Image (cartoon, rainbow, N blue to C red):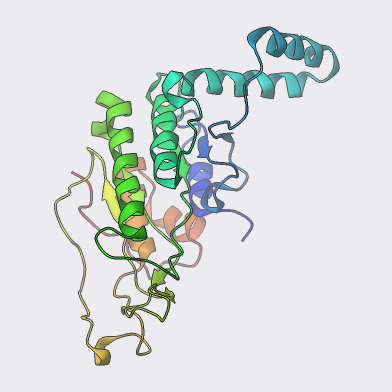
Length: 267
C-alpha cells in the first residue's frame, strides 16, 4: 500500500473532530504516517535559523507570487517558534541518545498547546545492533536510556495532557535470540511493543511467553511470535480514538478481520 496505518486511521476519524491532522517528527515523514490525510513535519534544525525580518520578507514575497507557499512557510515558522527555545538549540557533540530527548521535548511543546496536533509519529534510528550490542553498559543499553529519557520528556512537556495520552513504542523487526560473531544480534521475528502514558492501564506484561529453549525458537533462531502487533494497535485506536472494529479491519489494517483488538489496554 502507498500509505501507513496511522495516516489511514486519521482518514477515517469523524470529520469536524478535535484531531484534524498528524505531526511527523524527524527529517522525513515516518512510513506509518504517510498518506492522503494531512500531516505537518518538524525536526530540530542543525543550521542557524533565519531572523524574523528575513522570514517576514519571504512571506511577503510569496504572498504576491505563490500564496500556497506563503501559507506553508507561515505554518512552518509557527511550528518552529512553538517547538524551539534555548533548550532546543543544537548542542556540540550531541549524540543519538541526546537527539531522542531533544526531539521528544520539541514534540511535546507542539502538542501541549491548545491548537496543537493530537497525533504524532517519532522515528528513532540506530537500533540495528548487528555488532557491539553490549550488556548493561553497551550500545543497546545507551539506546534504551535515550528512549527512557524521550518518554520522560514527553511526560513532563505534555503536563496535564499526559493523563489523556497513549504512546506506542514499536519496531518493524525483532532480533535473534543468540548473539552473533560480532557481539550483536541479527534480524529476528518476535519482538515487543511498549505502551506508556496516563491513559494506559499499565504495570503488566501481556504475552504468551514461548521460552528460549532451542525447541521453542522460531526456525531455531528467533523468539517465536505469539501475538499480532495489529491486535494491540487496534485495541489502542478503538479505545482511545473510538474507531470501530469494522473500520479497523477494512480501512486501517485492510483484510485483517481475523485479528481481534486487544481489550483492556487503556484505563
